[in-house]
Image 1 (cartoon, rainbow, N blue to C red):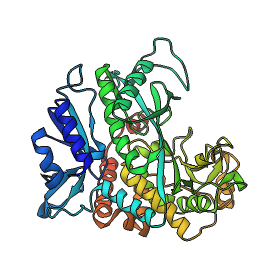
Image 2 (cartoon, helix red, strand yellow):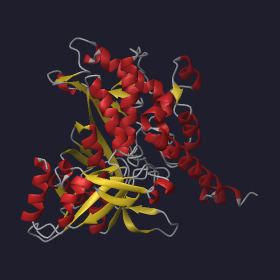
Image 3 (cartoon, helix red, strand yellow):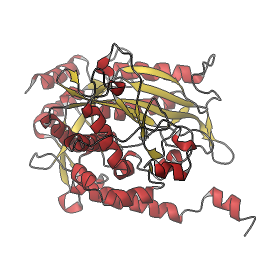
Image 4 (cartoon, helix red, strand yellow):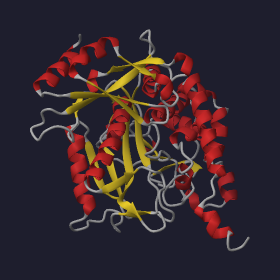
Length: 448
């Protein structure tokens, strides 16, 4: 037994932890959980805990349903919303790796998909770091008379609202996140009424993906405790901004930022430029995963600051990929920002595909095309075509069709995840096409 496992067992005993929740994620990014008694932990570390994988979205077929989850002791944390005021008799959690009955990693486990891609980056001498800016809405628990959610306030970007519920919410949510070992960099009110943003501090991509899954749980728990409802839906309200998860990316080689080069344009190295070129080349192929819901395209093509076209720029918020400004004395902070992600994505799969696309650009030495200096939305279609700027897919159906022909996505996700994802998203689109929306009734009933 290693030191991390010993630390977990000792902490569970010293803090009188009564239940340990083993967390893992299905292919669509939904958190799954099984609680075990402390007496079962040692066996869980060595042998894993069995479950029926065929009942979890995308993990296994019925004929191969037996699977195991084995906890990762490095992710141990006591849940601050459980247990007594002294922190005892509580509940802890650990993220798990999903295994086959013979102890091998399950190819359909999203966490393993990311681990496998990170291992490929490590073979090339790189470590991958990410920093997400997570937006979400806070709504009252009850809907209005039309069945539409009601924002908890009417504030806007960076607004300071005296005695505002969002202040209290963010303070409690951040306190809980930090109690779980998740560092927060910034928080503020966003553009939409009831819309908030909390930014997590830079970390390696696997830790960040685990942190995002924890973040979504904490936000919903705190909202519920305060009589509100939190939503990570990409665009929950018509006419108001959607919620994104702009994510900053960088590669490190040892202690050095591989994206930084003194004296280069924007201080961006050849590696950084080729990484962006890879992201741009494969952006349309990975969009079905980075924006995996029918509703995701209401955000991408709904105006505001969501990126709709495959372009890059320096400090240009209409671009898909942005090279942010940074303090000249901090070369280690050179990075790129991918702006298409929404907060309802599966972070393990999204990070794996962004890394794979960028690495492909580095491996092939792709040249970065000229950056977009103008507001991409304000250009005409002809101007965008002349500049070689392609649109992102306009719907989930289009995104799935593009993904289906992508060797990069198939190779990165693996056959099982790739096939399941395509089937699931086609089914979602078919369900959506059969639905009669309030828009259609408003528009057509008086006319037809």
